[in-house]
Image 1: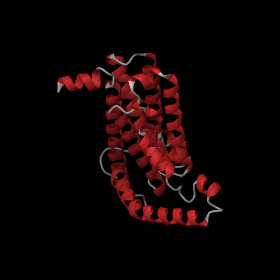
Image 2: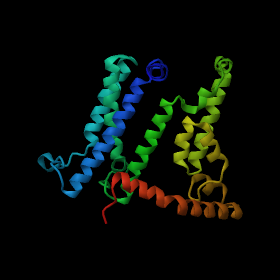
Image 3: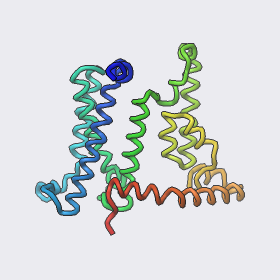
Length: 245
C-alpha cells in the first residue's frame, strides 16, 4: 500500500489534487446536509442573515477559492503549504458549485427544478477530478508515445484535434460529453460523429434542409430523454433534495 501511495500519489505530485477532491466532495456533502436540515427546520443551523441580508454560502466559497488558488500558484506542489492550499481550494469550490444555479440564473433557485443543475455540475466536476487523479490529461496528450511527445508538431496536432472534437460536441448540444471529452477524447469523438440535439446550434444550422436527419434527431432525443431524464432527476433529487412545490 505504501509503495502504491508513493508511485501513484506522492511521486507524480498528485497529493494536492487528492486533497482538493476529497475536500470538495466532503464540503459539498456537508453543505447539502446542513441546507436540508435548515429547510426542514431541524438542528441548530440557520441561514446567515446579518442585517436582514441573506449571505449565501458561495460568498465564503469564493473567499476560500481565492486564498487557496493564489496560495497554490505562489507555492509548490509539495509540502504543507500546497496541501493546505488544496484543501482550501477544494472547500471553496464545493461551496461555490453547490450554488452554481444561483450564479447562473442570478436568482435564488436553490430549491427549484432549475437549481438541480448545481448537482449535475458537482457530479461532473468530481468525475473530471477523479479522471485527472487516475492519470488522464486534458485533450488526450497522455496517449502520446515518448517519441511523439518529442515531436512538437504531433503533440500540437493531437491537442488541436481533440479540442475540435470537444467543441463539435458542445455545438451539437452535448455539454457533458464535451467537458468529459476534454479529458477522455474518445467521449468527444462519439459525441462529435453522432447526430446533434434538436435545439443545438448544429441542428439549427445544418438540419433545416434535411427533414430526414431532423426527424431522426428529434426521435433519438425523445427516446434518450425518456430513458435517462427520469433517472438523472431521481439522482439529483436524492443528492440535493427535491424542489419545493
